[in-house]
Length: 126
Image 1 (cartoon, rainbow, N blue to C red):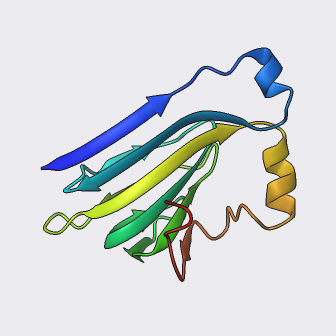
Image 2 (image 1 turned 120 degrees about the horizontal axis):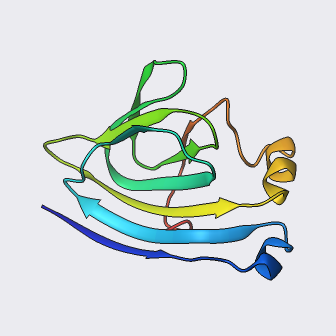
């Protein structure tokens, strides 16, 4: 069993002019279903705050995910991931898009080459 709360938005063209637009947010916890394999046309930051599981990116390697961790899902990159089927995990996520993502990537805040990033704490992100 799992619990979920999600809200998705349709930002107006005016919002997109800001350079970064939120497409959706959510919180989920428990024995969540596996995601993918899939490819998105926007960015998603998934913060795993409790539990663990796995992630498989474009390179096909399976990486262990142990909370607290950040998973970067970037546009055009095939990915597949899921929590441990026996214990699950807690996650929050934000879907976003816009030309400012290129600058955040250049500055090192979004790391496409490092899709699973261990965190010291997830409380602030949650």
